[in-house]
Image (cartoon, rainbow, N blue to C red; front, side, top):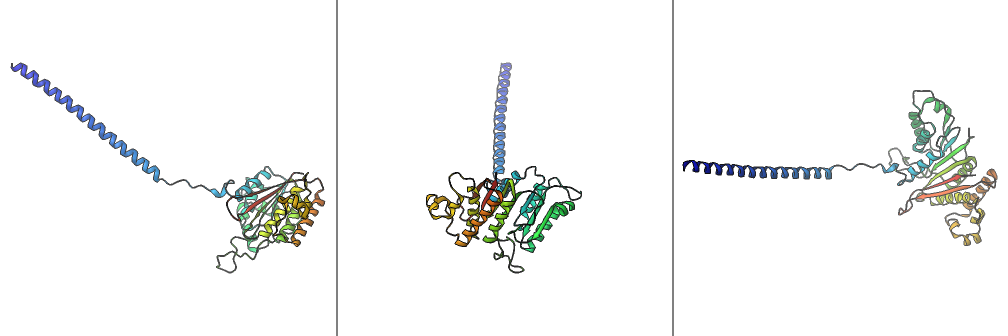
Length: 318
């Protein structure tokens, strides 16, 4: 009887022990799951609070016209040799530096290098020329600066004699962004800027210099000078019509043709004097290049932005 009771007690103890072990295992598992859940939630919160990557939209050609212009220049100057490029509005030297990197790749400051390419930079302001010269000096070896680069303080209305066929002429019209009226004044001096007459003469001279496969690149600013912007568009439209099979470029200047082709009508902002200058400048280009010269002209601007900068390109195909 005592033996039977002992066996019963032992059996009950074993069952209780097993039950206790099961309960402890469940609690331990639940605790672990809770810890994992908290850990996962903390990780998720950490991910949500982590800083977002910074995108450099200023260099995205799908967003800014400047980046798009640089992309087009890169295509024109791909593997460029024995060619000249003109930066007709040097400004703060940003475009000049980019062009120098395309024309003189893989150059270091401490080595003597030889190149067959030429870079010419123009600006009417002394400060702009000084800044451009310094930025190019920081980038290029002395041999290239002396033999292949010129920075001249002069109007872009005329160009010095080129030392080779010209592949690209670029313009960033308007005023120097960081120029000032007085020392210490933060406002740009908008009185010193490109003007319609000199820009039209410059475009005429540039067009006659460009070789086949070369391009004019013009950034215009309707907000700062709507007349200059309209004149640039009219001149480049004339280039595009040189090879048109349906419309004579001279029709832009006659009232009857404008009624038949209202999309080609000149802007009402263009007065008689400017209209005559555009006409005669186009005549000079046609005379210099011949009747078979042909151009492809494009306009790039942001939609939804009133008076945003506009990039106009004219590519010579014949």
